[in-house]
Amino acid sequence: MTGAGFAQALVLGGLSNPDGTRKQLHHHATQAGMHLSVQGLDQRFSPKSVDFMRRLLEAGMSQVVQSETKGCILPQFKGVYITDCTRLVWEQLGLKLGVRFELQQGQLEACLMDLKQNDQRATVIENPLPQGALHLNDLGLFKLKRLQQWSQQGIYWLVRYKVGTCLYDSEGHRLDLRTLLGGGNALHLHVGIGSGQDRQWVELCAAPLSGDALSKRQARLKEQSRLDQRPLSQRQHDVAAWTIYLTNIPHLTFDQAHILARTRWQVELLFKLWKSHGKVLISRSADPIRQQCEGLAKLLGVLIAHWVLLVAGWQPQHLSPLDALRILRSHISHFHLACQRSSCFPTFFRILAHDLAWASPRSKRRKHPLAFQLWSTLDLHLP
Image 1: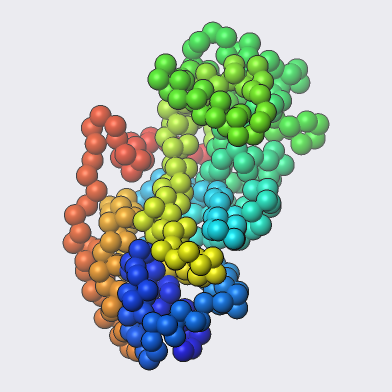
Image 2 (image 1 turned 180 degrees about the vertical axis):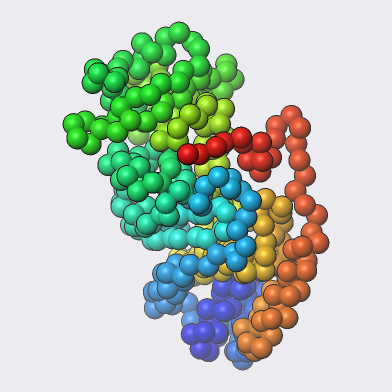
């Protein structure tokens, strides 16, 4: 048993079959060049192995891999960046994962945090962005000072309005958002946010929700209020009937803002892929030590899978992440061989690139267009 072999068995074994049995995992250990019994592999799961896999995962997260060819996703921007956090909880271990996902070339930046840390502590949110890029994030990462810094650096951003954010008119008078939303019509205003010298002028785009969408949002708010054990304020009730965006992109209509805001959902789909299909939180074992080892290995596995697919030329607007992952899984044996003999990597990537290129492309929807369809219709001209 070697550290490299142990890692390869867990990472590629979990990537190939997240529901694999002990014997199937042992088979991957033999493919990694190790000669030991199933029981011998079981005995290697210990607190030291958990620490080993965590250090290996953190080392992997320090790597940045991106596609060599820039995709055609929202070409108006010099990169489309989405930052978000998700919780990872096993029986005796809880972590928070911060991720920054760039859509045009697919690069991922990630960091691990304590489960109780606020999302604002995610180091990836502070990583520099190129001038002309677009950044999207949810309300958990809303921070006026950061938005101002991005505007000064020539970085575009769009976020949902956070209840309690003060708005001002051109004369410096505070605006009552509930009064502005009283008409029931779509709204577009040039407003100031922040106070004193930190105030910046942005666009506010708002439109009322339909009946079904409003019912769903109110249900989510009630459930969140129950979990937080904190009643909703009247202001939250009033604003809940509207979809409101703040952005520094000039002359942006609400429909355009809504398309860009929907783009943020791509990182949620990435988390869903890792959890539902990579099964990073699921283990067949009742041993908490083994659960943690396998969970960290599976997380590293889906991260490596993302890198490999990018190098092989995968374009997410043409082939869904799940379909791409399924194709990669069919070549895990070639991946094992390449890990043993580095001279086999060119052949592995050539075969994978061929299968990705000839895979059935994403289908289009007429009634409810997918995100990649909406991106192609976005007629947005930046100064």
